[in-house]
Image (cartoon, rainbow, N blue to C red; front, side, top):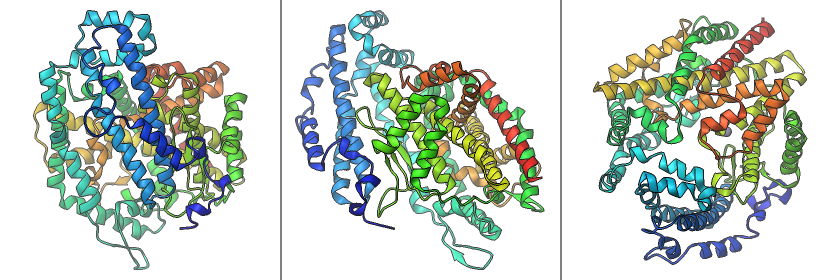
Length: 601
Ligand SMILES: [Zn+2]
């Protein structure tokens, strides 16, 4: 695929030299950071604090200074190694560098596993005294987060026992991963011309968007039939995973599995419940869209495998990359001069982005970096409209990182996963708005509207369906109900029926879809996709309407991880403990479906 990495001219590469001018200088700094060596503690100075944190708040402050300084150095080394490797995944020496820094970070985490238990062994009184000392003020929130776990921390002996079970408790998830990524293979599929095509989890997603209905149908059926053949084993893996969550929740005296998962980041269970109940109140909106989809595709009946095909063909833009950057920079102007100027600088002068494909470069797109680096962006830009939207998305992440790092000390510079997708989807909205204003044809406008509708369908509706199923699995385990394929299958189909309504035919293997979703092993993770997009849409609506709301949004972007996730969003002006943000997203969905109807009528 294309040119060799060494043939890519400087202007078309991200500026990794800003981190280390050469691999040699990286190696030098790596050797320096590596510490004492294989035997004994790598960083004896730091380990010398062990057992002494109780002695004085000054000591705690000195320890944390040194600890975070080292962590910061390691993360810089790590970012450089992973960026360089992603440029050329086939390069063995880059692979080796990446492996070395990864294992050094692993050592670092192991060597400091004692810190939290030791701090938690302070009595409540001692801990409060620690917190009130001026020397530890820079670490107040960090220490508060640790203290939060006190009611759910067991005696040292019991914590050690619990830790010993760690590897065993991972078995279900690992077994599913091995089955799903390595062992399972799928029978080849045929398109309407009778041509055979290879079916994998990767090609499946492509075929689901293919206009050839025979290809979609056979892919859907062949894929699910293989999972169906393994349903008993996978059901046990899921049961094992959920039981491991239940074990930890009960051992640590949480009310239930969900509380155990949400408690550390102080997410209220109401956030989860509101999300589900908002969906239930808006099922009719999704049903309506399914009916519209059936009409627009001109199909006598709509099946699961007709859900992903775009209703309108993508308009071929073949926009060149510079033009895309101009457009993205222009789209963020509503966020103010300062924001727009900084992004422009990043895209055009500082070379944040590695835009084009080359041989062995990592596929896809991401935003990455650390406290001491630019917020780099990896792309594989080909000039489609989706590519331009991806650039806007990643630029949103990068500006969030940039502003957080500029305005926060190292310890609070990374924002939590719960809020991570807000800035990226917000910027997609900004670009979509601009693209819609400039759409040259009805078709282009319809494509853009459908893009947004599909984002809400797949990110809010579908992920909430998953979240609801996941909650049900955990409730069953808590009540002692054993899992069987029949139980899971019936519950799963019922949920799909409620969400998609009467116009979607639930056949061809959808009853076994739950067997192939890795997210059900993630311990209450998926709902965050839905809340993230809802928050972004609600904030976009607010910030478009008032200057004050815009200011608050920018303040949120500068807040990094200095508070709990829900408090960060409250800075921005959205309260996920109320139903308002999800309801706003649902209103938006209805409006978009209405617009599409009118446009294509
Ligand atoms: Zn993202």
